[in-house]
Length: 116
Image 1 (cartoon, rainbow, N blue to C red):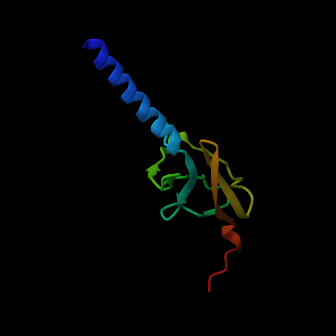
Image 2: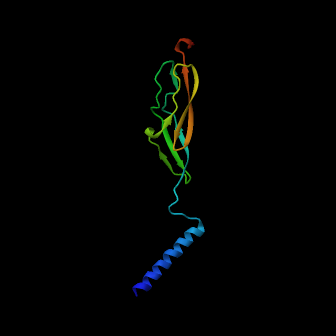
Image 3: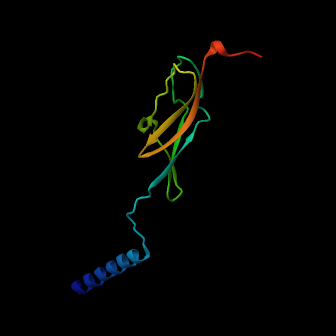
């Protein structure tokens, strides 16, 4: 009786496994991250020459194949460092988990700013 139950249980597991394989369903397949999105609403994007650059206020979201989203810890990011002694527009590149996104900052010379 014990052997018959074991045989039926193994057959049931085999049928379920074959059904999952046949439909392409893999319960262990990871939901891959396909994109990172930057929210720079609260980020400083205009600096004066010599200011310290900061990513304070930056929000990074990982977007998965399934559409699920998740906040990324800023400590896990690699962020390019702008030259704060060069006037003009600069691109900040943010990398995480093999993906990247970017945003622009502007470094101005306060001595050249004309008041209207």
